[in-house]
Length: 119
Image 1 (cartoon, one colour):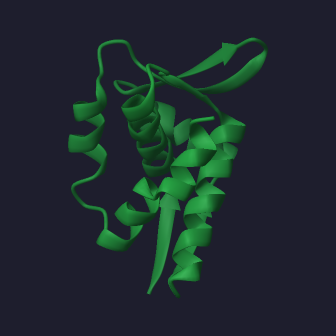
Image 2 (image 1 turned 90 degrees about the vertical axis):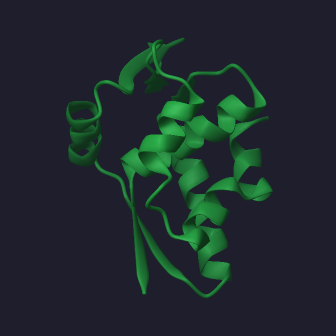
């Protein structure tokens, strides 16, 4: 089996884990991509095949399809994804975690992958 991880799941889970450790509601695209690479590495190390679906087109779809959750922001000259002010961690968990396979969820919450987000 091969897991396909889209930007919406990656961003949502990165924000969930960041919010658990801090009050940060914004992640740069680079931080999200580094987190995704770590998640893929964890899955690969367990013998699972996984692919990140990251492109400008998929990012645009994220903002179209999930505009009630996410917005693109520019902080200190760096672009990224921010969680809207009226959304909280439980909103993300309810929307983006219920359908994940256990292996993918474990990779998202793995201490090694979360360390990439929380410095």
